[in-house]
Image 1 (cartoon, rainbow, N blue to C red):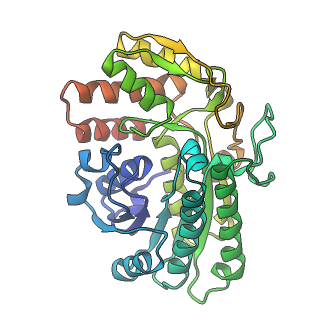
Image 2: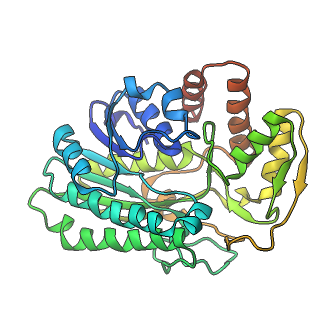
Amino acid sequence: MSLAALRGRRILVTGSTGFKGSWLCAWLADLGTEVAGFALPPEPDAPLFDQLKLRSRIRQYDGDLREEDPIHRAVQDFQPELVIHMAAQPLVRRAYALPKQTFDTNIGGAVNLLEAVNAADCVRALVFITSDKCYRNKEWAWGYRENDELGGADPYSASKAAAELVFTAYQESFFIRRAAPLFAATTRAGNVIGGGDFSADRIIPDCIRALSSRTPILLRKPGATRPWQHVLEPLSGYLSLAVKLLDGESEYRGAWNFGPDAENVRPVIEVAEGAVATWGNGKILVEEDLNAPHEANLLMLSSDKAKSNLGWRPRWNFETALNKTVIWYKQVSEGVDPLTITRRQIEEFSAQ
């Protein structure tokens, strides 16, 4: 699907200083949209927003989504046609350490965003991102579909399942009843990888830190499988969905999965091995932590709905996604401008 229809549109992205948010804002800016971001200032371990020079390329509103007034003021000031909600506390292990902060951000923050959107007649479409972990994980060997049971045995997963329920309540109670139509959808994506992610307790950043410092990559659960996909894959799905929602096509409301094909669901050990191969050197050390908090061993999404109804499809397989990711870090370490690499990869992805 062509994204040219987004050119000139006024789009607000929450979570703009995060990993996925920075990639999305960079893509939107190059598409010729009028982009605004709303987020906390970048954390010390999240330099991508600044590396991509986004503060000079978009309008940025600094604010905490846990507070009601700042997001209301940003929406009223910018008057967006489309809102893409990505702001979240996104880390499973941090959620164990900070459960209240996670619930306050992922649920309370979502409520504040939905209130601001509902109060703004200018907003015509909303793409509300949660996570594949919103599904009650039953360790099935097949992908979860959009109408499968929601739930979570850990704070992060529970917060995302709850955010889905809150979204549905606003959709059914307010959005579909508004005088000025608002077309809204929620999206769930698998584990994303890509250049510029430096978060703690994520496999790719952990690999890059180890490779850069010439220390072994430590794996705590080498056999855990995840649906790996490059960050551009779900972002392309969000934007394709946004085009349909902006066109006022009501059948695109509801929930959508954007995950990789089944052959790209791989164990963590293969990610580490691929990173070492692309980097050119490195070692892997397995140190399983028997006292580590629970994390799912197996989780897959079915994207059949997106493929059939939206015309979306994954473009880069596991090997390509991993290669592009590690090359991004390697080239930056060699002095190449991060914005140049990011633009090049977006162009390569869009051309397929």
